[in-house]
Length: 458
Image: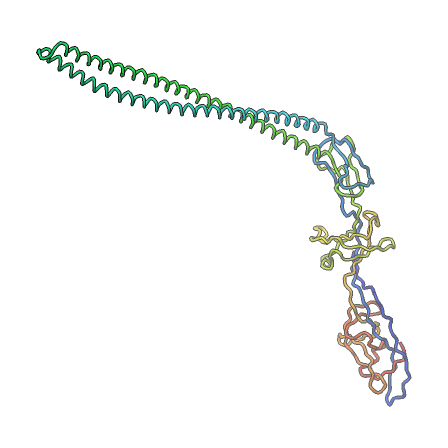
C-alpha cells in the first residue's frame, strides 16, 4: 500500500498587510484583503506498508545422510558463527579413518623398502657394468697381444724359412756333386747337418707359434665367456632393479589410495558436523536426536541479530530508491529511523514489484513478521504558498491579483499568471510570483485588472 503527501518543513506565517487610511480619491476605490506570499519547503514523500524480517536466515543441514547423534542448541539460544550446532553418529567414519591411517603406514613402509631395494640394485648394476667394461677392455688388449704374437712369429718363421730354403738347396746341390764324385763325403755330411738344423729350427718355431697362439686364443675365449656371463649378470641386476621400481610404484599407488581414503573420511567427518554460519538466534530446531536425516535437510534455522523491514515498491517508484537513503518507520504510534540497505535489481515474478530492504536504527524494534509503516523523503522543493481563495481562472489559465503601488500613494491590482504545483483543501503551492509579493487574498472574482484598491485587512 502506498500513499503520497507533502509535509511542510518550514512555514513562514502569512503576513497580513496593515490597513492605512487613504485620503479621498477623485474616483472610487475597492476595499480588499491582502496576503503576503511566503516561500515554503516541502518534501515529497512515498509511503508503504512493509513487514519485519531477519536480515539473514540460515537453514543449516548436514552435507551427508546419517543418524543425528547430538543437537547442542534449542530454540531461542544465541549462537555465534563457527559454533557447533549438531553432529551425526560417526562410528563408521572413525573406523574408515583408522583403516586409512593403517594403510598409509603400511604403504609408507613398503615404499621405504622399495627405495632401499632400488638403491641396492642400482649399486650392484653399476658394479657389474664396471666389471663388464673391464672385461671388454681386457679382451681388446689380449686380441692386440694375439696379433703381435702372430706378427712376431710370422716374421721369425719367414726368416727361418729363407734359411731352410737355402740349406735345402745347398744339401741337394752337394748331394748331386757327391753322387757325381765331385765332392767328399764330409762335404755332404756338413750340408746335411746344416739342413737338418734349420729344419728343426723351423719346425720348432712353427710349433712354438701354434702353442703360443693357441694359448692366447684360449685366454681370449675364456674372457669372452666371462664377458657373456657378465652380460647375464647385468640383465639379472636390471631385472632386480625393475622389480624394485615396480614395487615402489605399487607402494606409491597404495599410498595415494590410502591418502584419498583418509581425505574422504576426513571430509565425511567434517560433514558430520553442523556449525553456525552467522551470529544470531536459533529460530527453529525441526529435528531430534536419534533421527535419520538426509543430506541438506534443515536441522536448525538461525536468524541474524540484525532485522530489516521489507517494502514492495512498484515499478513507477523504483527509480527513486537507492541504498543509503533514509526512511521513517512507524508502528503502534512509535517512530524510528532507518536506512535503505538493499534495492532489488529485478522485480518479483508474481507481484512485479521490487523489494527494498530498510535496516532500522537498532535491533529488536519489531516482532518478526509484523507490519510496519515506512515512508521515504524523495525530494525537497521550494514553492510560494497562497490561499486557494486568492486564485482565479480565465480561459483555463490561473491568476492572482498582485497589489502594486500606483505612484500616487495608492495601490492598484495586476493580474499575474501563475502555475499551481500542489494544492490541498485550503492552500496552494504556486510558481510565477516571488516570496514577499502582496496579493489579494479573497473575493477575487469581483475584481478586475488595474483596479484601484484599498487594503483593509487580512
